[in-house]
Image (cartoon, rainbow, N blue to C red; front, side, top):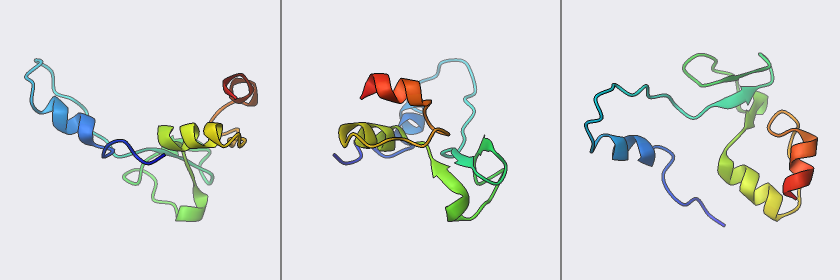
Length: 83
C-alpha cells in the first residue's frame, strides 16, 4: 500500500475555495522523543532518530501487517481493538 496523495494536497485544494477564513498551515508533525511532545521542524528540529512518525499511512500499514504501534502514537488498547 503506497501513499494515496501528497501530504499537503488538502492545503492546495483549500486554496481553490474562498471560505471566509484564513487557514493555518503547518508542516507534518511528529512526536519528539527529546521533548516528549508533538512538534514540527519549525518549532523543534531534532535529528531523525529522535522522531516518531505519526502518519496515518504508517498506522494503516502497521495495522495491516499486524504490527504493534509505538505507544506514543496509539494507545495499546486502541491498537488492539483496531487489529
